[in-house]
Image: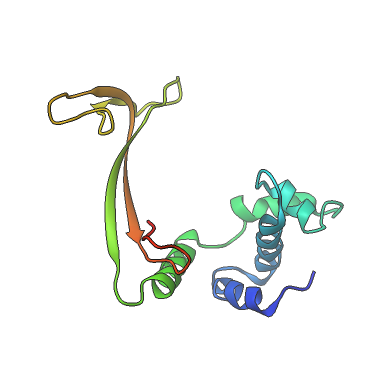
Length: 149
């Protein structure tokens, strides 16, 4: 499936982290994920890209688990590109504390924490769950009148 030049230019930024054989599969998965409707699974991405009848269908699942590529190198490149695109004049960071209310036998890090949403200055509310600290970049996008994180 031929891709538009604009998409090829964006994807070419990340080609360095893959071997040539893995890159060919990753490119199909990226395009299929963009075209897929509903859940973004490997199977739905392959069907959307027109590779649903490919006899090497299981090989595409190995891109995320077995293939040689570096997620750390890709994330560094992605962060650099996002900062260059959305915050050329500087970067503002925001920190947020979120309490995720989850329980079950597989949730081992659950504890009791102060609930920042339900608490106030006069009332201290404690809830059980996972405490997440989120670091977000605050950027001004051209199509919105307010900054996004």
